[in-house]
Image 1 (cartoon, rainbow, N blue to C red):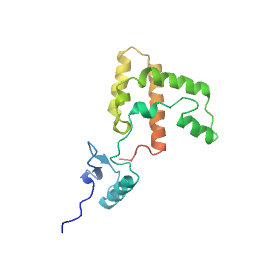
Image 2: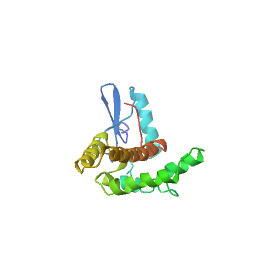
Image 3: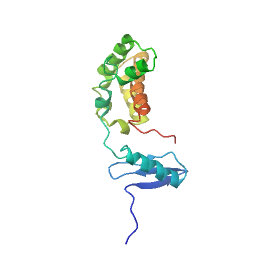
Length: 160
């Protein structure tokens, strides 16, 4: 009888352990420095169906954002008793619809977007002649989407 084969692969790069499932294109960090803790993290992720699970396109995930009645970010802030105005949502929604939801970025899977993709997106906006203040507002709207995804644990985020 052979040895039990895990449904994922682990590898150590430097001091951190990385994992990959058959559904994933590349390794992702566990943020752990010991193999035992890395195995524990990956097991938890697989139980919660985060690791290797198809993740939504950025466009599909970001579509309800800053729509006052459907926005998960605004709804959460209001539930926590924090202030967020309809005007703020309207302005941020304008940036999202006009520049982000019809871009190359929107066709990527949300967990596969890296810092380099955002830098390329920013460069593309600069090439179109959009002002620095407007670019910063657009990037801020994207950051809110990612922050909310991490807060809700829709995408994993680990140190490392």
